[in-house]
Image 1 (cartoon, rainbow, N blue to C red):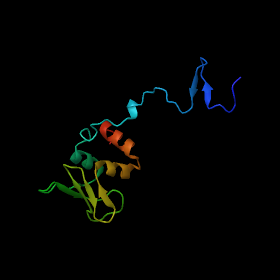
Image 2: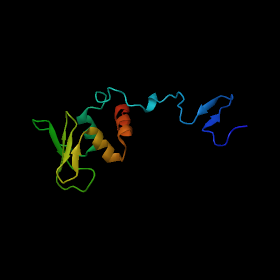
Image 3: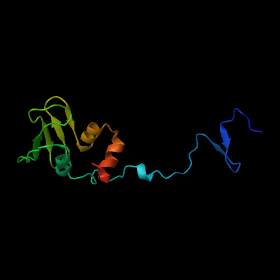
Image 4: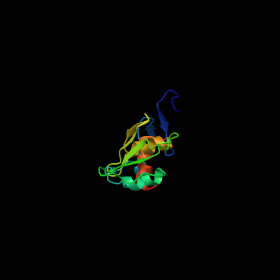
Length: 121
């Protein structure tokens, strides 16, 4: 008979496995690859798909557009079409391409990276 205070549970074959012990699982589908930054989509292509009426980039690589997170009569958003950095001059902040995707869709970091590298954006 099993002790009700035991921290171990019997398995189907009778072997005892502790609750804190890990069993081998296949988590590779949810793991962020080490080269994830190199696998992000091209910044200009990504932002053109996210922002309506994004201007052509200036000589420094910055393009302007209306910020999709709030009402915008003037182009308050600047995105760098090479590095992927963005900045809202209406006070919403700034960040990188992953941060933009997180903010836009309300995602955590891991989910945003996985969506971006799998082309779901």
